[in-house]
Image (tube, rainbow, N blue to C red; front, side, top):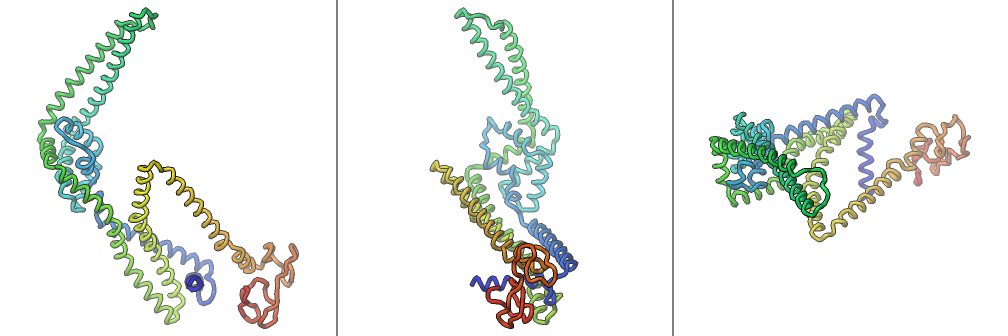
Length: 406
């Protein structure tokens, strides 16, 4: 079986690299390489255009919708703050992109009214600015409260030190009280401004409509959206591969029959080009198939394995596995490069083709039996015709007989 695979690979290589029994010239090889690169880039552009017709999970359940329904917990006391953060997290250009994707992707029925409500809030620029202002005021309020608490702690510490008769550190109680009074005044002003702004925002029609849509979302809808999201992410790679095969299989079929007919009718030029087209078209097929296998099997398996190891407090084992896999991969690559791609046999054949010594690589003068640099014998006797032929040549130069030992 391995021998059959190697023979088949050798035949394919000859079809790709030889024309009319001879190796491709440099000019022809350059043309073929440019053709391969152009076809390959065209295939990936076509795949991208093809798969864009398929709705992605993030288009059916946009990030803003996941944030509203799945990630956040809403109630009457925090919903205005969460809405303000949501408007800030999903700015208008991003939200417009989500809306356009939703229209194309037949959005989830739970998501559409929420996204449209958020878009209506963004459409009112003054209202969106007020929500941004509310977020800023809340941050300032939190900062001022933290500073007031630190000053209170410093003031209490100063009083305790004074009672204990310890020396004064240079900060007077009057200075601390003055700074606290100033910060407290600023805090009360910002709190009053925030309360007035909240009252105005809660009276806005678009915000009230958004909260009405939000009130319709209960635990059952949230559970349904989570299950739909999991199903979408699981099946999307399979649907994507199906769309890609719809684009690639007709081309593979055409190139395969063209190559078969060219071989049957002995058309070497068409055989060469069709073989390259067939090989190039197989590249995205293999690439997308491997990506599907990674998306469905190893990606999920690795995630569950890491979660299991973390639960058992054995996450270090994962790093050991990664190190072992890296070592195994490095060994495999070294073997591939040393034994297959850059093996001594390949090096020897390249030297013979250039008229060099098979042992040291010196360019040999004509008629010499041994290398003048290392003394290695360059010829041997053919076991079939008894004539002299290159020592490491695969075939006899006189009769063409293939030597058993190469």
